[in-house]
Image 1: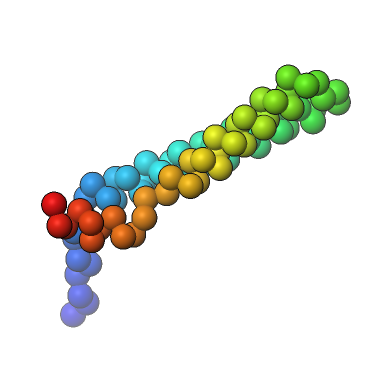
Image 2: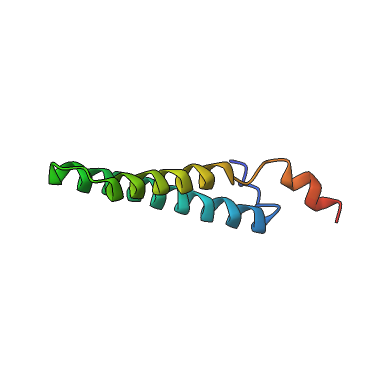
Length: 78
């Protein structure tokens, strides 16, 4: 017989990871979309460049907010 997969011990952690993955995909889409829009015009204005830098900054910040694996051990003590 095959072993059944074990249920997730911490559904809150799993939800946090899924939300983070969804957000990472959205930020990636936003950065690519803005880049394509900027390159399609053929002219790069200062405002467009600043928009792209701000979107990239927030995208990197989102990546740095990834839920850590050590969260499980700290939550079990509460």
